Length: 270
Image (cartoon, rainbow, N blue to C red; front, side, top):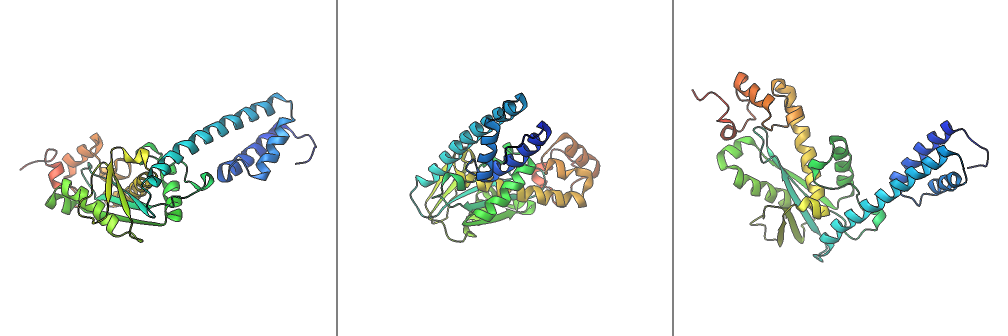
């Protein structure tokens, strides 16, 4: 940047531009550093307020790096080449499938290469989940998604399907993982060493990544179903038993994607 003074309006526009560089590339970006240097020499109140914003963002980013690094460190602590995280979504809805994802992340990363923002998928907005899912799938060594339909859930029960969908997600992974971490539920019959971690999507990078990928896949599937069954508002409730969903069930009856054993208390038993 040159030494010519610029208006506060222009300074704010530059701030928005350089902050995007900071978000995408980190504080070591040369353009961002030049902007910081320029701001530090500007004595106007508006410039000082922008500098305060940057300091708060840097502090927040440092805390996020620390949080996510601890998640990667847990995965690295198992000391294997390929560790997979597995998680499911859709255990409780009245309609739609149960879905699981298994993800192998690159573990030996520098802090700048870690996927920031990963956490329990339910704590993320749909927009952020979608963005993170794409980043995860692009950066993952391998990932696989599996689903079990409502008909299988009715036939075999949700307990069996919960474990089976996780098994299918892991079995479809390439490369085959050396170790598997799952969120909450132990995965039996893998012939691969496993550990289940309570609230694993808060503590393990690979489990959190799997949680996000599975959630986005299932949500997009339910949004597609909502086009065929608009009365149930699946695009908003994702098949869960909201008041609106239950009211629609009592009026219109079940669709082909409803879980019969889950809805028997809400429909006419005649």
